[in-house]
Image 1: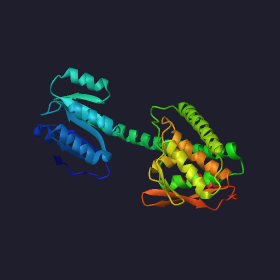
Image 2 (image 1 turned 30 degrees about the horizontal axis):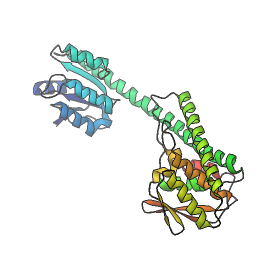
Image 3 (image 1 turned 90 degrees about the vertical axis):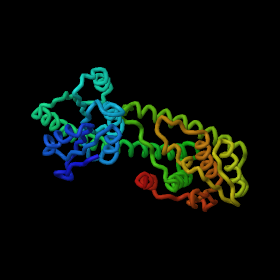
Image 4 (image 1 turned 90 degrees about the horizontal axis):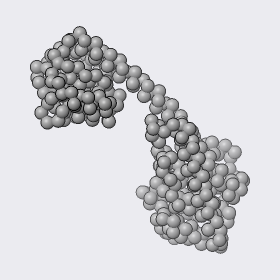
Length: 333
């Protein structure tokens, strides 16, 4: 593997892969003034170059016939892992079947036959570098837009937790929401991005509504089950009842004196953290229902991170929270 000296470190680079040393030298002399050129002599070397320099590579040019795998395999690899890279296939042979397949699958942008017309080759690569810059600019703007949508989705989910609490046990009660969100922060669960390229925004809203509705129904059913069991006479009795309900719903928690200890941290914020196409489990619904039930009976839990687990212990029951408390939680996430 040989790397040509970069003319400018910040410039988008071109990877050229060919097993013929003469072709490599010829390409470097012809194209080196346009951009830094990184070269390899096989598909495996090309993959290694992409993995090492993918973020600064703008164009990949690969010969088709090389020892081992064909060049279109390298272009396929690039299209799956580095979609911003403009991919060009070149060969002295007429391998029409492989070339047509690569074009149809979207693995290549251009097919250039050897021997090259240097002026035409330089023009092609100049245009390819410009296209790569446009793709990066588009991706940057898209990420910014999707970041806003992602924040909105998470805020909507947090708002639904508050709405469920208000609907099921009363608008004045905020303690269950406080405990739920504090535990989610301690678990350090990040909101998973949906596949925005495959999911239209209106479809996302519909899917979120369906998921939230199903979750709300499960929470209401689990709350009814806890109510039927009767309220605990002490904080310890209440924690024991919650542990039983969670274990029955498939959430593995353990009791330590008066504490409830979670080791499966992702389960603490499943509704907030899982993508829209992932249904919320019965166990997670039982968790929120448990917090609502505890609140109805005048009990509260305080979460604390203890190593790889989160422990919940009985805490002072609070009824007063700042009016902007929910907004503060949304900002924290």
